[in-house]
Image (cartoon, rainbow, N blue to C red):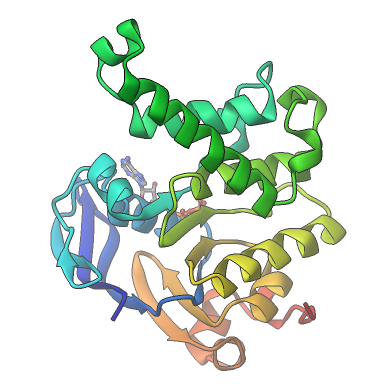
Length: 259
Ligand SMILES: Nc1ncnc2c1ncn2[C@@H]1O[C@H](COP(=O)(O)OP(=O)(O)OP(=O)(O)O)[C@@H](O)[C@H]1O
């Protein structure tokens, strides 16, 4: 299996924010992690990207045990993630935001930076090429020189994707990629996620927008009070009794959108 967790648990004091969660993602698939507020979705992401140490259980990426690896090492292995759009540098250009993000993750040592060594120049060139490629992928080529403060919320979401894509990840973790954008714009972001998967990138997202999830996800993992209560295709999840109970019949019955 491309990626899997084996019974991972995270305790904060007495509270198990994530408890004994086993899940697996296939290469090039889209998996959505859903669940009511406080279900443990963000903590699950933080565990698999190395931000929080895991209390127990294991995480495997392409059969490598990455359970105890620090976040930078996990990122270098090929797991990228998006951060909130509030982390963007509003006064810098779209391109510079991707360049800064990329350089933070690939930078040469301080001496290279001071003396502008050949390696530093080579890295700069590569960062630029990767940034432009990522921006073209998310279809932001036309605004690369615009300051972030002047682009729309939806463009900021695309930019967050580009930041994650610039390091050539094999898997991306997207935290509420469509939060705060209108339904039409949500369609554009869903299309981009499908495009990533079609390019072989394994996509895992946390999202509350149920109509989008129901049509976009290949698989849905449902968390409630830290535990996995269901895993399956959207049509299975919609009919799952435990899921309906957890949501009190609300959002899982939202209409399905077609992409
Ligand atoms: N750093 C932390 N320290 C202590 N408790 C935490 C910490 N992070 C999360 N929790 C607790 O763990 C539980 C799960 O939180 P988490 O943020 O993972 O849920 P979530 O499903 O992402 O929720 P939401 O949809 O509201 O973002 C909550 O009870 C939360 O208060």
